[in-house]
Image (tube, rainbow over all chains, first blue to last red):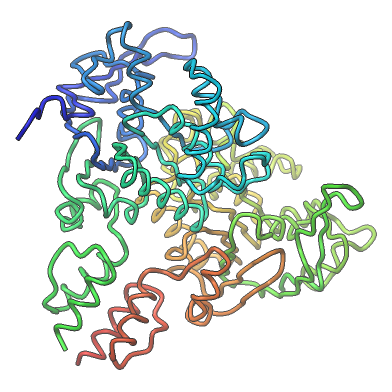
Length: 289
Length: 281
């Protein structure tokens, strides 16, 4: 073990986020606790996934990772920086880039390459360097050939990849994706997940993926499941997806292959728990013949 | 008692630089009471197609027959058609606007000129059909969860007592449980009322689980039309147009390739499990 402290990309201790509940006239009628005592550790260069039903607190947690929200209790460090410290705000945002659900709300340029260059330009990156980064980031998400295209002519998956390129061009150490595939068709989903996978492998970017699609998290190093502002399950995908009934109780699901394996197990076949991939199930069944 | 499209074409902005053919010679018939899925990648024409079903978009050429009558005939009552063919758009909760749930659901029937009493009766019946709890009838629709808002929006269409319910990605953005709840409810509705249901979806697994017939759209044309088993047999062609088969279908094909004696046509977990058990027996 060497320098374990500095290897944490995201570290949170007893994180709490409360906000006022107001009536129609704006009077405070109570407080809501969207995040309630969350501890997390996400090592540099790893892939973490966050699952949770609508309203479980997962998006609120994501927004703490680049200081869109700051905690009302506890502390979150992003790349070793306390997000509550106003002096660190830009360093935090530089370290952790964010991609949201709706691609149409994130693209501002009229030409793809301008859109991608917008972030580094804002950071004061020299012009030559901006173009280098634009080219590099568009290449890494497989969108280089569309650099001169108008974003509104692109498909959802393509737009989302441009949004990711825009974040990558700022060279963050970490990228937080809040349901990036929720509005996409199967192909668009695949394109985005492949692009993220490539970034992780080639650029060693830390990836935090928030999603409702169970299939997208099977390669994660760790999975967090949120409910009521708490982390209620934590483990590897295999550990998490072995606990089918528990997941369902949290309004989640398991990949369809895992579900088929579970069904066959319940019908008496000798198949291990927590099967994630179709090859694993096929191998397990071949052994039974 | 059906909806029929005959050689329907639709061209956007004809004669301009933006001209685009969104529907190409589409012919199909959907009998009353069928549960149909429409799949296709973004831009394949599926949303344009469903907007034709209630006359919202007018075909550039071709005919659309509802219960045997051409909806483009002079004097055809489009307003009536729209009460018969209810369309629930994507993210329908964005269209909620009233002060409470019940008033919101009453909006449709009120526009049909029904009395307040009749409107409320229909609204309650519709809310009941989507499984919305009575204790929240007087709540503001904006304070509901995503899944509940969507139920209210669907009830708003059901309150007009349509014979055909068209849903454009009704589960987009919902968590897995929310997805299952909405679709289970739609299935129950279909069984209990005999309503035709047309479901546009990006989830192959969902389509396979619920519908009896799948229409695949590609580049504005009808590419495949059949039962889930028939359609997903063409998984390689589906992949070429940006779609896929349900995961279990791939497992079945893999098993067949490895020498299992089974039919690879299963599209749901139950079908796949049955077939695997049979082949191992």
